[in-house]
Length: 401
Image (cartoon, rainbow, N blue to C red; front, side):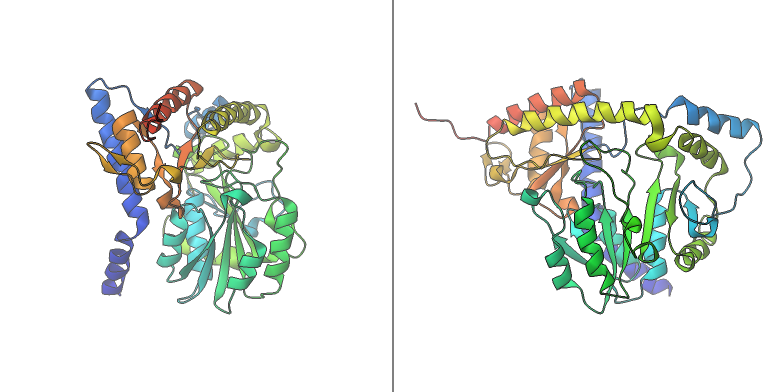
């Protein structure tokens, strides 16, 4: 067993996720040195809101400590959702929920269906569960949304879990209810197939887009594991608080796993989470104000990059990422740098020439794109865009006079 564990993790070390994390780590280290040397640089890679936790739940956490609310708590409790307490499991972040779900429902050889672009951890989590990730590509021209016909053509008797993320990281795409209904009809034809619906960005959505939870569709509540949390909409990344809701037997299996890993989530974080939920629907005015700021930044980026020739954009309907197709710049030769062959080399070039750190699309299963996070101030984004444009201008051949 020990040897098998080592072999599995040795394989994972070679996978793309670690490769990309190393790239991002190197970018961050280079940025540190740039700051030390007095070089003005921009970081637009963040997966968390650059907005401090709202005072309401911050104070709730502090009061929980003062009141001695620091003991173990039950793993499953009512969260204001339409589920019984034993259908909900509170964990140390949504990430833990997703991994436990995969471990609980997948057997060796099962297939996990993952639309690309995807959050970088999905395929690796499937491999940890001894399942096989099956990647289904999507198109920027179709807003990176899964084609139901493609899904149906790829399902087999080994298909165990379909992972959907709406709003999406890294694309910001939001699945319309009508499209989800088409997918649900396909799922209904395959009795063994479950759906993991990652809805962590549920409350960061831009009108007229609306969020539809997959479990709310007819016949899907018993087939769906819904994952959510507090890190995105409530800017509570460091509090490590997420939850999964689903059929009792699946949640019980996740609970058994968690009892041997971390036990319950932090009682202090749970108190803060309850305070956040108490702000009202979708986080109330506090989250609404934050979403308004995100929308302003999104609109700025879409307009700015839309002015560049050869760049393809799908306007995000949610989350705080822009996934831009810069592949028209691939193949460019840069003196002193070399050839730009893919998203990774383009990101290195933009860091080298523009002092702007971005995340290559290779990490998310689409090498034609680069992810830009607008969980940064508008001023930071404005400065970053100017530098990116200047660096990209140098890649275009001079127009003969």
